[in-house]
Image 1: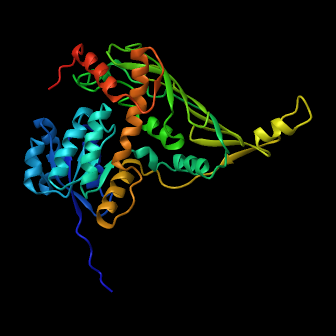
Image 2 (image 1 turned 120 degrees about the vertical axis):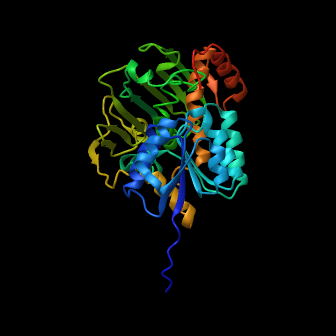
Image 3 (image 1 turned 60 degrees about the vertical axis):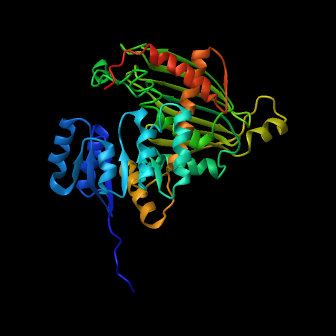
Length: 378
């Protein structure tokens, strides 16, 4: 029997800010197998100096992505730059026959991301996105319950996710942050892509959206820091999504109502109020005017490691080495992006927005905001 071991996947990190530094530190400390960091790129000399302190002479260092791509020193890149740069850097990486893992969000607007997805589809390379919340066991359990129809037909969903509190000092860390030109949005493009991805992963995309966004409601910023959105789905279900970076203490509460009861996820606990009969059946057949279905109160157990970011990177490496299926395919990043885009477009047009999203109109409105942006983009 052969004992040949495949060579480690050589990773290059483009963008050595908070995320790039975090990934590098954990990978260096052995958080993944069959992968190593062989190159780092950042346009900031201080960031490169920090990378050298962490990785030493085990990696090469570059001040431009082009130089990294030309070096032939990596098999794959992790792109952890500001949002607008994700699609163009991914497209260039594919042209060098590299595998690509991008941070969330996939980009800032749909037309740019579609271009990236088309290039990825024409390559034979692995394309992933950092949808790390899909690797949390509690969300995998909720996904399983929905797919196994334990709740029956879903009729109503509500997610209040207001525990993304941020200070003014947070927004002042970088000139590009919380500006239309530099970041492309606020809570919907920075904090909530995780929740927006899970929302569409569980329930799919809505057919219609009406949202209300407030810009600089709690902070001295030009982008949205408070959002309340109403949604309608193809099966007749309705949904609510509420988020902000201004509430403290905040709430993280997901409610899913179905024909067989209600699931509540809060404080990392999954509670299921299960009806012994489908509600639709009981409503039509009971002869007692003021009766209600019998309900069983169930605490749903779940287990497994909370792999998050390192789970995504390990899955990415495994996909490169042996074809393991990605839990977060890069092509799916457009779904959560455009869900968030639809909320902004609804506010900007003061109207309902339907899917598929009008990408040209969204880009037109975004460009209007960029023209007025106060970003000092470098």
